[in-house]
Amino acid sequence: MIKLLNAIGEYFMLLGKSIKKPQKMSVFFKLLMREINDLGVNSFGLVLFTSTFVGAVVAIQMYNNFSASSFPIPLTFIGYATKVVLILEFAPTIISVILAGKVGSYIASSIGTMRVTEQIDALDIMGVNSPNFLILPKIVASVIFNPLLIAISIVFGIYGGYLAGKATGNWSDADYITGIQMYMPTYFIWYAFLKTIVFAFIIATVPAYFGYTVKGGSLDVGRASTQAVVWTIVSIIMANLLLTQMFLS
Image 1 (cartoon, rainbow, N blue to C red):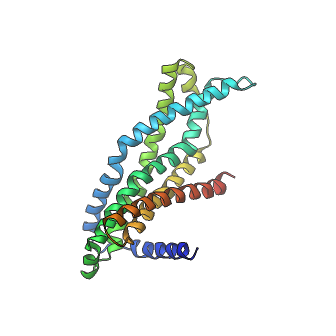
Image 2: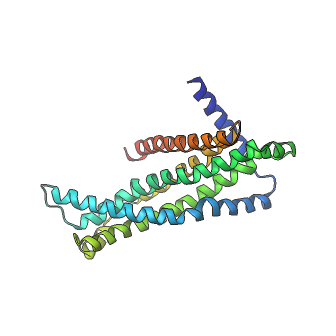
Image 3: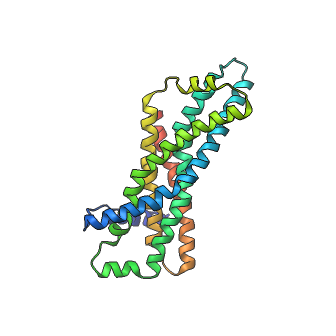
């Protein structure tokens, strides 16, 4: 327990050093563009593939549940239910968990490698705020780009449900599209993107902490990357519970 509290304290102290005005905005902007490419653009393919199949599975599950119901439920509700489930939970949470594995391991291993090869020590000796230099561009890139990835995930998830209907013939295109167009509270969308921003911050900072504080050699970097992914996913799940309780209860 004491070790956990000590780690939490170190994490917030590292955040305090990271979230400061960059020493050179031109350098920060170049690093930000690189991180947007590494953390965001390179994740497009994985997000599109996963979202399409998740949307198809959700739509099929909705059809099976509605068909098994003792009450007659119109097929138009398949599109509506698929849309709501994807927006509220599957797109922001599942995609963020997937990004925690892909992006989190990259962040932890890249910063950890710099730590064990003493590159971070060299930055500190030169008077550079190394947490700000290394971590802040990752935070900003994730917070800016992850909502775009989730928006694309929602669109392709809904499209995946449409493709599932075309493939199985269980519901018509008109029914599915009518369901998508049914009214949904606007705050559902705001809630989804609020969760995404919180998750993006977690995905950028938790692995950065494990990478920055790693000690030892290359094997320890690998262990730190594994720990970073595990604790990032745990943090996302806990934050998801808290946000759901706060905004939807």
